Image (cartoon, rainbow, N blue to C red):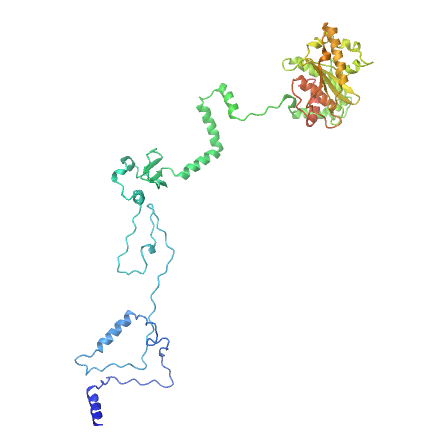
Amino acid sequence: MGALTDSRKRLTADHRLPIPSFPPPSPPPPSKRPKLAPFPSSLDPSTSASPPPNPSPQIIHAAAAASTSNTPGPSSSSTPASSPLPNRRRLPPPPPFKRPIHGPQRVLRAFRFDGPARPHAAGPSWSSPSSPPAPPPRSLGLEQYVELVNSVSHPAPPTPNAIPDAAREKEAVPLEVVAIEEDGDERKQQDDDEEVVRGSVVVRRVPLYKELYEASSRKRDAKLKTLEFEVRLAEEGRLGLERLAEVLPRISPKKQEVPEPFVPLTDEDEEIVREALHGRNSRERLAVHELSNIVITREILQCLNNQEWLNDEVINLYLDLLKERELRQPSKFLRCHFFNTFFYKKLISGGYNYKAVRRWTTKRKLGYSLIECDKIFVPIHKEVHWCLAVINIKDKKFQYLDSLGSMDMKVLRILARYFVDEVKDKSGQQIDALSWKQEGVKNLPLQENGWDCGMFMLKYIDFYSRNMDLIFGQKHMRYFRKRTAKEILNLRAG
């Protein structure tokens, strides 16, 4: 007990704690809660597994000052030691560091185009402020770009003499890079006005899209085509009027010429024909042919209306007009003879009667002999149908044309016998016409109704007298009726 008492006394004498110089704080009243609650267990720095947050610089500085003032020195016995207070206020944790925010930035441009570089291209935005800012990237001009391409394509850098002096003088002109050759072969300078070769980069003075746009505009511009036409005329020797007629048909498209038998009627002719065919006075005289003594009244001419049969007066007058047309232009038409509609009936009256028609063809009356003609046309009327027989002296054959497609050999044999007698009677010659070929016409245009047989017969005669093929058909019959009416009213066949 004595030893224990001595050690306690020694501990008390040697290691006494300094008495604080300030009175101890009074405990808070029991009815009031402390202003700051102690840390929960989950947030207690001593029990938490995660390291405590880094204190702010202000807190670190204050703590250093406090520790310096409380450090024991030579006079430690006189300075009271600080003891933790049970209800000391705790400061809130420091806020976390600000995180950088990445926003849209402008893209760095090349080829001498100015513009700010992207900030994240040079490094993070949270670099220390003490470090100097990175220098801006050097703008790449044409020479620098060529050097860059050459350094990639060729390990050795190009020598200064690789670029000719003539090309150096043109560096100030803005050029456009249109192609980069990967093979590295240097091209020769082709045209100083259009292309310049720098290493492996081909540049143009005029952008390629402008050339393509101008070429496309020239092809589609109608005014340019007109100008090209005028320039072409000027380049061919400033053509005069005499050569212009030769050049225009080659440049301008040729117009298809309408054959003479199909020339359309004018509006005036259409009105005259309509009035003649549909007038009220049926006995009015519309045409009088003095040589044949044929009078055409409105009632007779109305057979040329649609769905009407042609009568003898209209057919015979039209055949006389065809003969007059031949006499006006003998070089344009064949030499023909046109019998009227009564000839064949007179020839076959009583079987075969040549004497009944012997005086119809005297040279004094006609002015020529039948043997001198190329073709002789004989209308054949069979009760209610018109046909045509042709004595083709030029080709030495007899032809039969029926718009219904039938054939009558009896008519051809009678006409062969008649022609032998006619030549023997008028010229005293003996011909063997009975041995001539007797045939129908192949590919003959045929009628498709029951009233156009007479008009088909007239057009067979008209086209054969022109020495033309039969290139008409049923669709032309309405036009032929109006044209025939106009020619009869004018007493002139066209």
